[in-house]
Amino acid sequence: MEFNFRTQKYLKNNEAVLIRSEYKICQIDFHNLKAFVNKVDLYKKRNGKTCTVEHHFGKWIPFTKDLIRYGKSIKKGETNDICVGDRESYTYEVKTKYLPKEAQEQICKLYRA
Image (tube, rainbow, N blue to C red; front, side, top):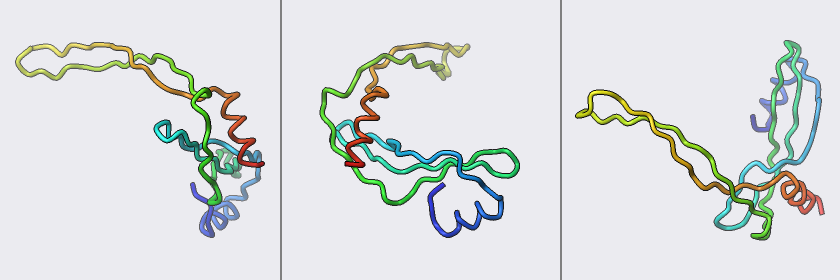
């Protein structure tokens, strides 16, 4: 949920209480080596459910290539070949990029500096 006047009214109607407010990485652009850091608030409504609110004043922070880590993830799928009577399931590995938690904290510190 994005932060605007409707969000404020919604939170007020649901008697929401602020639990946690922190800066997080919301998007990562690995091609241009930039991460979008924004303030994210977590509210608890009167029915016990939580609501996450993103603010509008985030910005793109450049980072170095040495912060990126590589890993493998397993993808699963099914063939939908009509000429074969049965559907076959298959799995394969894909190389993925990610930022470890320490690197994310370092980028968030750059936002506040």
